Image (cartoon, rainbow, N blue to C red; front, side, top):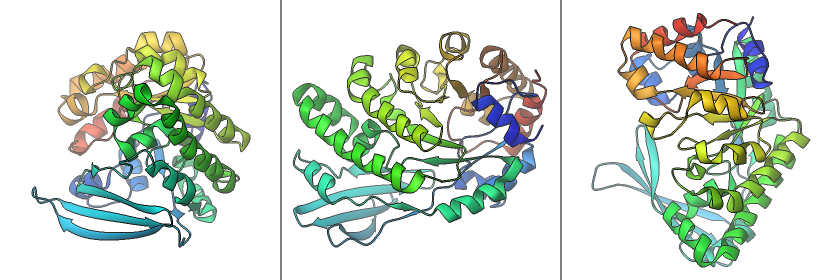
Amino acid sequence: MQSKERMMIALRRGVPDRVPATVHQWQTYHLEKYLGGIEPLEAFRRFGLDAAITHFPVTYPPSPDWQVDIVRGISPQGHPVEHRTITTPGGTLTQTVEYHPTTHWNTTYLVKRPEDVELIDRYMPVPVLDRAAVAREYDRVGDAGILRGFVWGDQGGCWQHAVNLYGLENLIMATYDDPAWVHRFLGALERKKLRFIEESLTGAKYDLIETGGGAASSTCISPAIFEAFCLPYDRRMHDALHAVGLPAVYHTCGGMMPILDLIVANHCDASETLTPPAMGGDARPTEIKRRIGHRVALIGGLNQQDVLDRGTPESIRQEVFRLFAGYGAGGGYIMSPSDHFFETPPENLALYARAAAECRY
């Protein structure tokens, strides 16, 4: 069975020949440091893993109402920094982003005052997806695996996108202090995301669209906040994706056990990343499979630090078999590290791939 067929059967909660085994968004840092700078598809082929290629070529049409000026510098810690100033007819927004070879983060947020949301609502442009470029990449990946994309935004989910613009603690406090404003904020982002789905994702040759984001994990917010401020927006977005023929995977790279049923209720087709306790999550394979495995496909589960980075051949093998026993029973499961990895030795990736290839139905 070819990788694409194997993965698509699992995404439809069916039973393939063996468990599909992949990684989540192969990082440039790892490719350059450990694999000689090869591109992700070649890395998947090198290790005999099922490819999950992320490709999201978007451009922003020029807008006189959203003028971005970037001044680059260096932080006191020696990291590259971008100071961004965005000029709109209604006022100015500023943001500072700091970079590291493995990630980047906001040191100041774009939204600082409640009224800043009105500028985002009125003036922030929605990008355009290059569907022709997506089609070319889809054909290039071919039977080697699946092609993944996103709903536009700093994060796929409305709540998670708002967190990137305003800060997690700030947004949590606002749900108590001014919930109506939070809904206006989320609604402004939702309208832009739904527009992107209609204008750009209609007809796009993707196998899976990632939504959500870690900021909605139950290690970040309560089930009550999730139900009130994530669920309705996620559901409408997933329904819009389904209307254009695209399945959605909902990403929670943290706790998920208290919100399992709410994740299913948002109409997603798959749930990731099944983060284990040692990686800051709370995933319990057998319980997750029993409670929601018959309603959504499952992706993830593998501890990328203790197992992939530092594991012995025997511990890697044992963990692969444990995950297959817990998540893989009856199909509907794609094995993967629970999120990005950066310092995994290539020989450990080979051990992971070989062990997964033995997990046959």
